[in-house]
Image 1: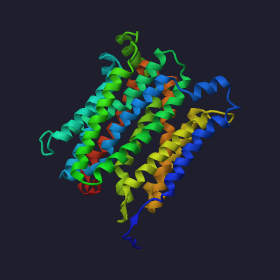
Image 2 (image 1 turned 90 degrees about the vertical axis):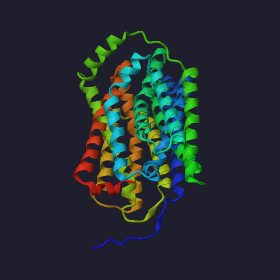
Image 3 (image 1 turned 180 degrees about the vertical axis):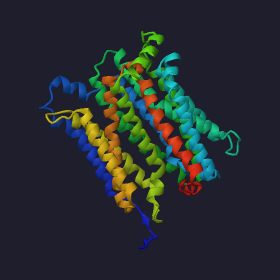
Image 4 (image 1 turned 60 degrees about the vertical axis):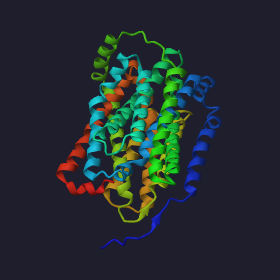
Length: 420
């Protein structure tokens, strides 16, 4: 039986944006009123208000997320626009995941040796400043065109562990309770998603008039944000010195990370999550346009990030009040929902509206899982080993993605048609 292909455009219903915004607003606004009587005053005050230093950190984290988001908006479009073939795009992806695999396990220990995770965050801003400057000034025909791809991959690896590890160490050094971190973790996911939406709006606005000037202006915007980030990291929030010797911390890392089964399971869960997210962003666009209809991906992306924001606001609801759940139980249910959503997509083609709904459900689960895993890391992982544990857990995910990309390249070259 043939499939009738409709030659039409598909766009999400504009009311979907308002629905997601209202759900996020009511989820945040009603939480303290709903649980005001069921939670003790001391616990509620710790949960509802983070220290002022945490608010400053959230501002830094928003800047970092915006830097990451500006380049993620373009995706393969920038490669195709610059005349790169699909083989070159695949090589760029392999280079990115390969560099992350090679350096991800070393970066957190290097950040300890050079003076702390705040310097790793500074390196993150410098790498984005370099990438923005390179794309603004160096022609795309330069033989070292792979250099910005390598720098972006290193910056993404630093982003995955440095900011969270810096926050946790500062929270401990300044004498705050760990309960305040629970509030900050879901806010990190919430504001990261909001920053990604903002960076998409900025990039689309810059690209509206002219593509050439739009890409150059996006590089200029990244340079500007990176300079602000460098200033804020160096002048705004300085890391307090940590007294434990580096040698003792390294010995502790090997004895704890590889001998504690709870940490190993936590790292495995984090690796599975990152692997599924990376595969999703590689395949979501080809999956939506498979039936030949024109789809405005730029209108669907805010729905996905909005669903992620909504999922992050659910996190405090599940862990507070008389019907509170254990974090482990929340993760079991959330991973099950993610697996079912992706299984339906992988089993057979669905209508675009169904696919978008499943994708939103997937990202809502991601928004719930990310702060849950961060909370479990606070419980089970020593603070000074947090960055190393996160980066080591990313290594299996990067290795699996790199293996799949190489397998696609050499086993079935026709599958390269799905790229771009």
